[in-house]
Length: 338
Image: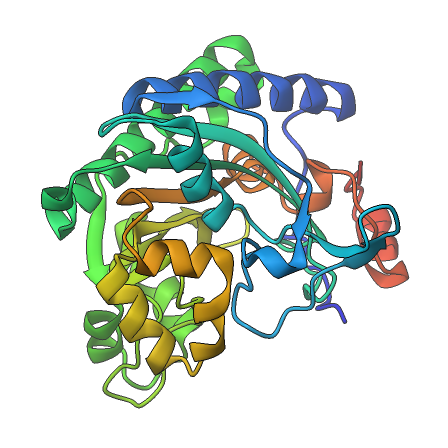
């Protein structure tokens, strides 16, 4: 399924096809350096797939089907990762990382059920990061400090990009000040709008927004958006949104949060009707208190490149597979898909 691609009137890429590739390479190198410096992260290698029975794969909103395949020589089934939310926490345990330090890695995924449009592709690439925290850091203040650090890394990356590529001087600067708001506060502000319309209305005014507390049911009886119950604490998580002046919409670059404690996991599994997961290896270890307390998230690589390069379609910054209508619309508008 796909949503018709929207190409703004008179849109013209600031960079040509190969210069875009060079700029993507620059962004990916320097942003990871800035992020690692801000959060004290070390780079590690990560899997493309995990064993289905391990419980390490992320089921996102609970309806997406993983790409699965059997491995004859092991006699077991593997799944291409949806994200590395659980794997990273297990890795910190295995690597013996201490409080205040963490890891960052490239995450590449296939999300076969993704609805294709300007922002979504079946191929997902992001920086996945995770950091060990002390129990005292399980609070909103610490979460917000980390969000501010990520935004600083993005702003620093944009400054370098503008210095190297003069054509990028015309792109709007990222607003470094972050406005924090909870999903319930957003619903109270715009009770007659849909969740996506609320995000657009608020981010249009405030430019850089962290939308907190995603996953739990609001006063309306519905959650703002779905979240798996076994990685983020629904009261201490959120999405980092920027106003995208090219597409004129709220633009999510990162989903992140303080991870579930044993007590929070126990509660959220019951709320989500996922008690069967208690028997999986990862969940058993977490419920037993064997895994470290952590904070972590994913930061979209293609999304960040789109935002900083002023691109109208995610296919301009990544190679993927598109339906014929998307290919036709972009060709007619002069939008080069990689």
